[in-house]
Length: 326
Length: 258
Image (cartoon, rainbow over all chains, first blue to last red; front, side, top):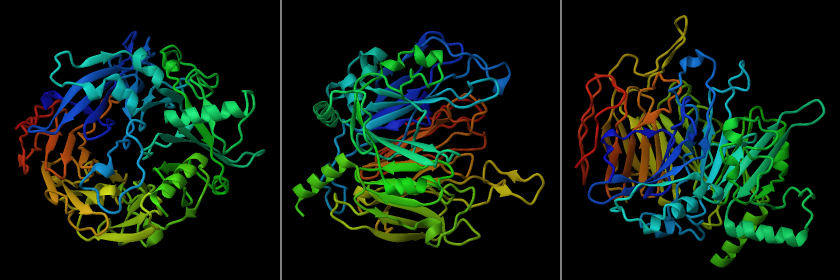
């Protein structure tokens, strides 16, 4: 049982359920060498007589050799300051309304499984620009299905009285079951999905030679669905060079691709390319959404489109209009 | 249509991800409301989508943040076997700073600041000023949580009590996050912004079961002005005691104990 007197919590933690809290710790500083870029603390919530948190596991993120410190005097940074920020996106928790006595209204017919829910993390280096004059953020996203956490720390068999807790888990043990996507594509940070899906959007402003375009991709990490797409694709064609049509689900095998941190179009940083982030290659299925509505609004978007999802609906919000389709 | 057919149609739609219907709703400023600057509830953010429900706040009057109104849309749903419907909830005197919903529980949770709604931006001086506390030199008041029904704005029948007062007083009037997850709410009272440009800002942590009254709190790690104080609070089942520090320090001695 954790003594909360000296506990501090980062702003961007994730509450997966009324029993599990994930606390990311940004532990990598500018003078760190060959250390995990951060850790995920897995806490169990005890709602009995004295509500409390128990730290049961520490899941390590990839080991990074070093992150170069920005020029002296920039923002007043020193070697003791945090170099890599590790944050969990909020809003991905799960509860079962069918089992809840406090759920009201009409009963839900279908409900996604808890194990397939997605938790997303973001890693950023806020002060390392592409060159001395730019201070652009370089953010990467890590998709972690709940089941990876639950199975890694064996939550269903955990005994809080176990004196060996918290257990420390190296990246190599759980990382390959996740998927790392480097954000050349936008990913809506306001995603409220409670399923195994996420959306990636990419907006192209109008150019002289081409109209504006909004590419919308859905990625799904449900293992049963991914397997079905894999089987269907292998029956359809064995030629991997065929470009899939929009509106067709495509199987992504457990290997890197053009949106992985090691892709050739990603600015190469030592901390990304050699840290083992490329080991996070869980397979997934993806689909490019085709919609007349999306094509129509693409030309009018001033900034990017915000896309939200729940189990049945997708919602676009952009600077000119709000629409819903499912 | 039977449940099996609903489920089958849902699965078909999930696989195809094609548009089966499209609706456009007018919410907030498009539905007779007003946007008020520097108040995140009513500024130009996208409506929240959660559990098949859209919600969007706006001000009722053009020249003041308060009173507020909430547009609610329940989207057409196979899961509920329901068509879409829209309604509006009005809040005459509540200075609401954040909120969340749990449509499956018909729950609406409101974070209210018990002080006045002041405009932190003063354009009448040169250069224009922005009051980072939102207090205009006044004494900060407490934040409280309300548990209402999303459908009718009444006190929620499953809530142990309609209002939770943890005695939370921060260094400003802007509020902090609150989120719902089934029978619990999670809230992140912010500490005073740190001057360390590379630190990941820390927050307090409040987790409260609104159906049983169980409360878990950690307010350590706050950087608090010496003149702030935390009020002891007695919940319906647990007594949570805080021992605030007496000066500006980087970590406090606040703790929760029975």
